[in-house]
Length: 158
Image (cartoon, rainbow, N blue to C red; front, side, top):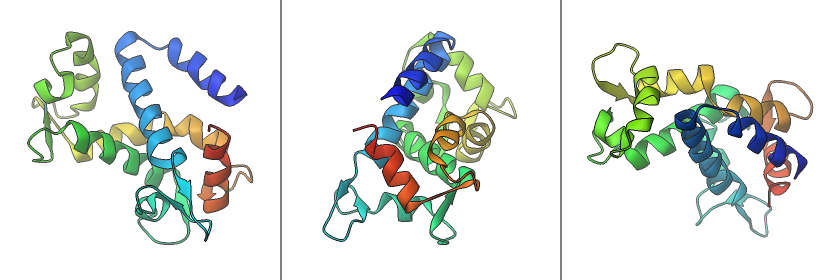
């Protein structure tokens, strides 16, 4: 709980638009990974889907910071991409909230008025909240999260 409080305090010091985006990301982290039920085989699943395995794109049994960041960014991106074309328009991003426009512009690397998944993932890797979560969860400081570290970190949030 102490770590969750520290994360909440960190988020509260961010600008309002960034705070909302970071809050949404933390919510997705909690829902996608910490909301995992544990079955009899002790595998983390949500509705039968092994979220850890989905995030582990190179299938080495551990998550790099980039794998975790990309997974979360893609989950958020897909939930907001209304027409599922892989391109986020300003309207899709802001949902009519002009306070979110600055966050959209930060991610629109080529300034074409569209944020692609690739742009969103690049921004997430460089600036995402996963950076802090990773520092807290990586107990052996090897730069990766194994399944046990991920389970322990998110169990501490429940």
